[in-house]
Each structure stands twice: as structure tokens, then as C-alpha cells.
Length: 403
Image 1 (cartoon, rainbow, N blue to C red):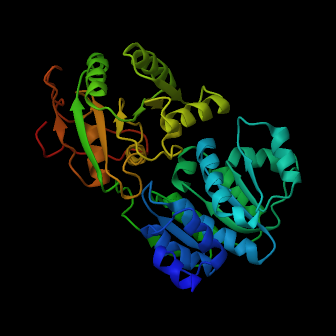
Image 2: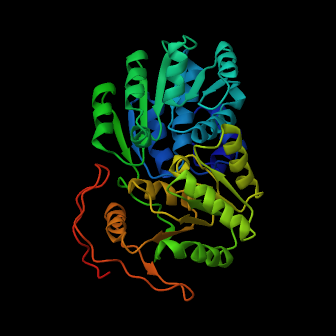
Image 3: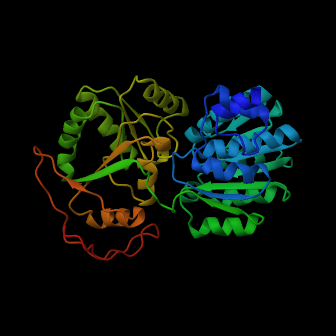
């Protein structure tokens, strides 16, 4: 009787998930699996190595948390999750705590900016699951605080971002340290050749699960660009904050810029906080929790937080500055329109950034609508030139669309 009733109330039945975890999902009101969960969970539960490509905000955490918890329920060993940022690590742990609550499965979070002493104490408690950023995990390995010899399941989450941040040497060291007889799951929003190289070297016949083409922007996020001179950005920002009344996540290219923008928004009379690398972990957590709870209406962030902010109901993502790396545009705007919800993204581009906008359009395979504000002088992109930049940007030819 009970199974039949539960089967009608959740779409997670039929994926091979154990009844105990199904009951937890039902209690948490997780009723319908997202596409990445529906495709990845059965293969992961079967013990297969997985390469999962899905845009941000598609529910990837549950796609690897459920299989990892289920396997560790059935056999001895540990799970290890590597992630690029502190915020993302804390949010992933939150999911593990919820789903693994009935199992009483202990976790340890190893991240920079937090007390080494407390992390050592949590490791002494023999956690079944370790969630870590690569640099801090290496610190604990070098101090012999942690033994990775019992790792049965490894997850590399946001793998492309970890490589962008220069963590490849640390990742490869961890991969050489843990047992070869393990299950590896790699999740990423994009699939550069460096990740394919990792997969070839360290994974066993992985199943490739792709929900959206690499670089695809969130489906239900509408987008627009304002061409504006640098010294007019603040005035346009003030107008838009008066026009939109919901929560706003604003991205600045630099932490110095983030501080200046935050002060300006305070002067406009809005509740605002900031999150970037100059802030301590405690300050970043307070800013994020304040944004989630409604204490702050606007959160100003740099790209270090682009993938570490998992907040539902963000009305607007505003790119005050375009990102240095075009790939980060997808991750930024993915903070709105989470898991099928609608969202909106606005970008400010200066007249000399026509090539940068074209690069974003090439990545997302969509032309970005150009908007004008009646109270801000109308600008146009300068005539595009062929430019050569770092290896993050490929050679780009002039756009066919008139600027």
C-alpha cells in the first residue's frame, strides 16, 4: 500500500533509488527529477563512471549525492566531492545533510578560510563523505590529517571552473592518491579538452550524459544588453534598480569595483552586501544568508561567486561588467531561472566591447537583444576589429549584425 501511494507522489521511483532515500526525497518534497537527475542517477547507482554536462541550475548536486549516499549505505568506504569554491562546498554539504539525514552519515567540509583545527576534529570523527576545495584538501594531505585510501566514489563538480582557477595540479595529485578501483563522476557546464584529458586518463569507460550543449544558457532566462559609456553605468543602474523590485545579483569584474558599486547602491537607498575574495568566509556566508533571507535585496559579487550562489527566486542578474572569460557569462546568468524557473539577465557593455558581446553570442548561439533607456544617452558599438586575446578567447571576426 505505502509504495503505491508514494509512487504516485514522486517521479523518483523507477531510477533504482533505495526505499529509505525515496522516503527522504518524498519528505523533502522532491517530486520530479530534473533531466540530469533522471539520466545520471540510474547509471551512477549502477556504479558506472559518468561525465555529466549540464548548465548551471539543473540539479546536478542531487544527481551525484543520491548515488553516493546509496553506495556508502551498502558498503564500507568514503565519498569525496571536489568543488572550486567555499560557497559551493557549503551548499553541497547542505544537500548531503538533507538527503543523508536518515542514514546519520557524517560529513566533513575542508575549505580555505575556515578553522584548520575544527576541520581536523571533523576528520577525526571518521566522516563517510568529505567535501573539499582542492587547495585545502592538499593542505590536509600534506599534514597527514586525512587518508584517501578508502575513497570509493569521487565527484569532480564544476570541473571546468576548477581548471579555470588553476587547480589542475592539485586535482591530478588527488586522483593519483585515491584508489584506482573507484567510481568517478565528473560534472561540468562546459567540456574543454583539458577535462576530456582528465576523463581519458583517470576514468573507466565513462557514460556521457549531456542535457544541454556545452555553453548553453539557461533556457528560461531572457537576456538583453545596454550599450553604455563607463561613466553612465551608475546612472543606468539606479534607473534599473527602481524599475525592478525583486532580488538582484550584480556582477563586477573586480573586487575593487565591487566595493565601489556596493557603496553606490547603499547611497541609492537599497539594502546591499558584497561577496568576493577580500571578504572572510564568515563575511561571505553572512552576505549570502542575508541575501537568501531578504535582509539584502542586492548582492554584489565577483566571478569567484558565480557558481557558488544557489538561491531560488533571483529576479535579475545584472552584469555591471562583462566577464573576462566568456564562459563565465553562462554561469553568471544561470543564477536566475534556476531549475526551470523564469529569470532575466541584463548586461552593460561599453562601446568598445562589441567583440566581447559577439564572443558571448557565439558561445550561447543566440543574438543578444540590444536595449536603450530613454534617460541614458544612446550608444553604439565601435566598428568591430579582429582581436587576439588570451587562450580564453578565440580569434573573432567582425559580426554580421550592424553595430
